[in-house]
Image (cartoon, helix red, strand yellow):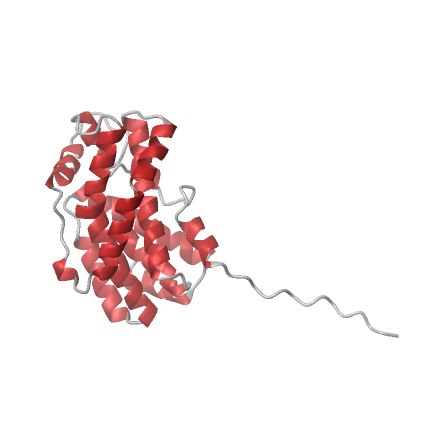
Length: 238
């Protein structure tokens, strides 16, 4: 009489896109909703007052400000992690932690990065995430943390970077929708209008060969962040 064999366990399935979408979802618990990246002050000062001015502001942030810097850091960190060059990776992480013009901007990136690494190393386990957490003592900026996770989990650089900058843009639009305020339709129209700027920022970041050549040209953004530190009424932490 033939013996019934137990069903073989299915092979584990990994889907890079699934992981990337999970990590960059607004539901991923890193506290992104509590930061406006200076937008709250820009609204208070009248620099952002409608969808058109919001698109203009965020295009500058992407191509000449934080998007430009974070994109370059992301690409450099991903390449170092992908090559297993942890000395270079740690140097990039240290530079990224210092590359902020104000204390609120530093808090914004550092708190989200630490939360991202903590959550991801528990939910999407990988020894390189644990090792980075130990070496950096949990202090890591958001673009470097996401780049690390993407590299060790086999998510292509261009895809991961595009997703990161899309999520960054979408979060700032969400802050503007609550601050201006704007309607949800205007928020989506703004996101659609910024697609080309996000793509340009991705391509510019991929072309960077030396982080010493990267800088920002958005002094008004830094001014808004500085002013936000002492703003009387605030909804956001930055």
